[in-house]
Length: 263
Image (tube, rainbow, N blue to C red; front, top):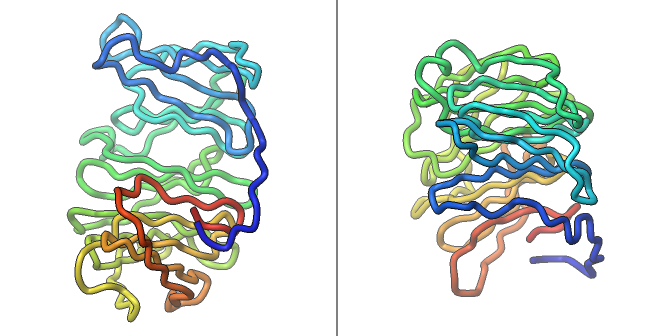
């Protein structure tokens, strides 16, 4: 944690008594809450093979909807309180907060064929986008889940250690990849990744986590040598603003931003 004068404790949810714990060790429960508090979605495996029941709950813990899903892998909430359900082949279902199905789409015929490996959401000022990696290693992106126009970036990079999406009101959507200590960047206009030779990049070890701030202006990189670097992504050459040596033992599970402060 750096540069933080004080923290205000604001309780968003309390004593909800939600079904968050699996009944069996092999059960996988999915959980998603809204970015600015609000409804909660929880997916619990049902008795039928590869199926689950998604419950939508209010902030007081009361259930307001129930959805049957097949092969659900990811749950996300958009900034406008829409629930995104993604299955194992990249089929995307969009629901409102009351469980009404609004839209169905896919992340491409290729993903339907080979399957999905990973998915993330990203945000603009008033839109939520979705990006996935399929099992062929290709990236498929929609800038808005409510009006999905699919585009892709081909990638031959193997063994990705971290990656993120960078959005801007004046530049195309960009995807930044890191494979150990090698960086690549791709954007919507080129649909391919190009290597980046950043002078601040470490030549040994590997970068293991990256996290953008809420304004999409600064990127926090974590190296496995426990060095954090703060990067300005608004300039074309991605300048390093600060380097921080973390002097403590133990594994770092997650890094994140609270407003303009780093944790």
